[in-house]
Length: 450
Image 1 (cartoon, helix red, strand yellow):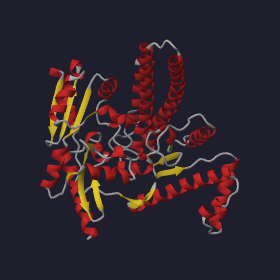
Image 2 (cartoon, helix red, strand yellow):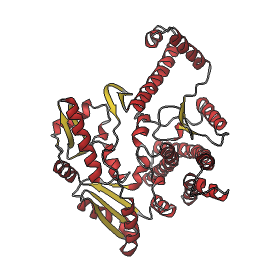
Image 3 (cartoon, one colour):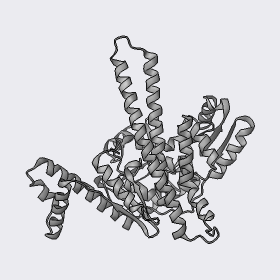
């Protein structure tokens, strides 16, 4: 793993510091930054990192395939060596961890080009599971176009198949003028499909009805897939342009993008102070607003004792390892946190463990103290919500088979979801302000309904 961590450290530099360092080395004025000149250097770092990640992902795919093959062979043996099977399973988990961390590098680039606006990035995530191919003909066409675009030093074409969280568009092309989204289509069938869609548009024909009348089943399926992509793109643009619109995957649900009513604050500085303090005893703890509990652990405190102590402080509610943000879809990436590179690498390697928990009862209490109407749901209410919600059941936060209802009106109940917890645990937003923003937003929505 040491060699792998060395690669991650190099990628960390390319995505965080390469642009600034080389802009200044080439005579750039750090007090009055020229954005067009600066972006050339930062883009170069992004491009180099993206190609390196692709190279490492392809190598890891080969390693993973070999591990799976070994596991299958071992399981087929009559006299199974359980110890060897467990070792191979561990190797597989490590391979998946490496793959996830490499994709997290690209997620950190996406976070930067979108300015950390998770509400916008969330519109490009469709909850679709399963990795896409990074070796097939379609990907090679996307890579070729990305390389062509990236020949322009002022542009950076992000390949979305390398990310964990962008599922609309094949390329997101950043330049000082903004971001363009490109779908890459190859092959004869795609060429015919594009021409057909052009014909439908020119003649004001309903594409859904026209596609249903196509005799060739494969062509019809291809057209339906492309039509679905076009509809998702159209809905996404509508949401981003108007701050609201129909949810891309469910016409019965709507998406609303809200600006913060109160100026956001983070507790990044408190985490850094705890990291420094933990050098004394091997651990350090602080409660943020009596709602979010943070523990930092070193040495032997990393192995169970620290976690148990924080779980008790958090009154039994779930605590989360900060490294889990590498597998969370939309949130501040570990590689983007305002921490020194060495600290980030210590966290990645497990030399420093940071656990964060949210006391759900105190979220409810504080929300109600400032004018909200939060409460625990019944088991039935939680079951009904998981059954009918367009979100996956695991996205709804629960404890002992009850969820947290943050607001309710004649149009239904708003349950606490993973996005809220993510903002507190992974984005490190101050809980008082985040709860106040939610309460204010819900109150405005209820008033609008009335």
